[in-house]
Amino acid sequence: MTLNVLERMVRDYYHPNAAAPAETQERKVRDYYDQGAAEAFALHMGPMWFHGAWKVEKAGGTALEARHAMLRRIADRTGIGPGSRVLEFGSGVGGAAVALALMTGATIVGVSNSEWLSERARRLAHEQGVADRVTFLTVGDHDYKQLAAFQDGAFEGAFLPE
Image 1 (cartoon, helix red, strand yellow):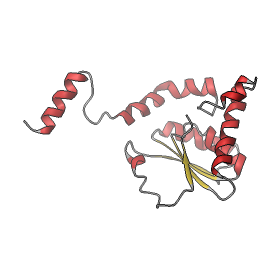
Image 2 (tube, one colour; image 1 turned 90 degrees about the vertical axis):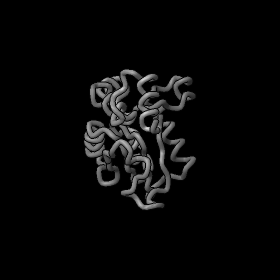
Image 3 (tube, helix red, strand yellow; image 1 turned 45 degrees about the vertical axis):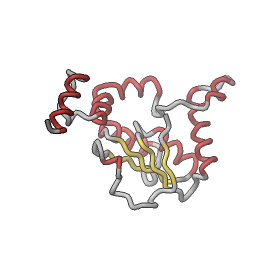
Image 4 (spheres, helix red, strand yellow; image 1 turned 180 degrees about the vertical axis):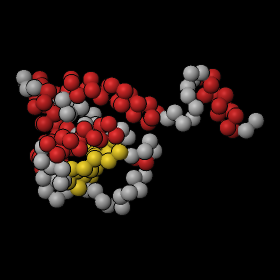
């Protein structure tokens, strides 16, 4: 029995409804956002889809204030400032990247595997006047693992607010 046959048998046993191997976890994530979840997140959370500094909310601050506080903490602890180039993984509709750029003067490149999300992120960057410093790219389901489009050292840092 070859390894491929064994792999299929194991997959079919544990995941009998799983799609063909082309159905990757990355594709499932993209489909999740493209098929309506993104709109629900946007209605509920606005353009920033991550948790903020809990101490701010505990002290009576809003969720938005807590998110800004979290971004400020990231910037302060990492030294992100004017001239910095930063990569954001899973940039969603762009709120974190745009806010961080406005806050610090840094250049941010956001990556997502959903063009639906990237389109909205580009629109937000344009609306906020930072489209010259904040860009959003849609990458393939496995491209994020290597990001061959960027040379080593192209970024001073990377972040993934969650």
